[in-house]
Image (tube, rainbow, N blue to C red; front, top):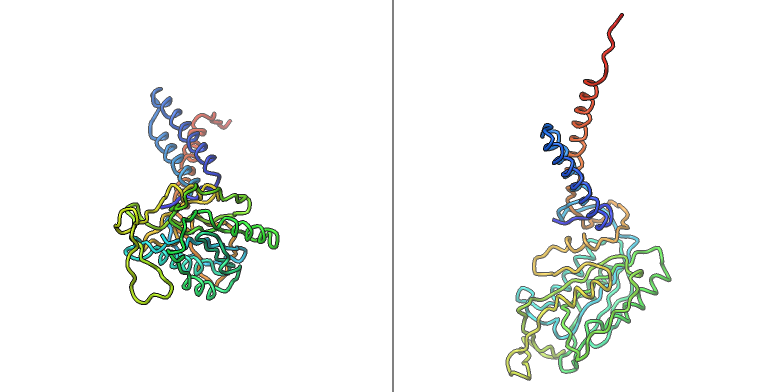
Amino acid sequence: MTVLPVIPWWAALAASALMLGGVGWAAWRAVAAGRPRTPWILRGLLALCLVAAVWRPGIPGAEAQGAASDVNVFFVVDLTTSSTAEDYGGRPRLDGMRADMEAIAERLGGAKFAVITFDTRGSVRMPLSADTSALEATAETLRPAYYVYSQGSSITAGADALRQRLEASAHGAPERQRVVFYLGDGEQTSATAPAPLGIDRGLVSGGAVLGYGTASGGRMRENAPDAKGEQPYLLDPSTGADAVSRIDEDALRGLAGQLGVPYVHRGPGDAVDAALVQAQPGTLRPTAESGLFGRFELYWVFALAAFGLTLAELVRSGRALLEILPVRRPG
């Protein structure tokens, strides 16, 4: 279950605390004074329903009809050697990245997509295009950097390429939302700490940092471009044992904070809808042609219950008012 507050989360938290605290205090005073409990129980339920409606709970996975026709989507894909680590359900992490790129494109019908990859440096593999078949072809042809040439990589190596594309998009089509999906494992193999992304958060309308891999890690195979068949596992030169790559979720959360988007861990079989709900930029035009990610909204259940409790409170208050009004007698 996810929540999407109808107001900023801090305002929703403050309003919830004030409402529940106020009703609770008034109920305690009334009961202590010997007044009936039932009306205050109903008022407490009314307050709970209103708070729940404000937080807008829902279950990801519903299919809504729509098209993201005002959205530019930028995929930033980690193609360092660690993307071959086999801890994505026994398969390379890159398989999960490819699957998520294709799933996101399928659900964001009408959007334009660009692909930026990085190993030791970033490069634009596919400029913005609404051609999803070109995106699928690009995703399928992504290959990790050959480990022999790897001299240590930074998780922010693609920052310059991403910044340039975002700035160009903001200048050329300022009316379009700019959504960024960073796909990687957060493993920093460079000897120096990663440089800040240095991207103005005003350039990013939404998106998510998607993390792949496990804490226990996975072994990586040699990825020689001309090799045939299954290749041997890479060895750690310091131990002589198989080299193991592990996800660094703290680093990925740090990147998410810099971009102003959520971090979502991805595993085999995880529906992409949950990540999309959190990343939704909010500018979608309804159409009848394309299925778009959605969620089963539950807020209306609480809003309807609050409406019923409000009517009951009005009826009770009306009766109480009639009882204290003077009765006119004829004559």
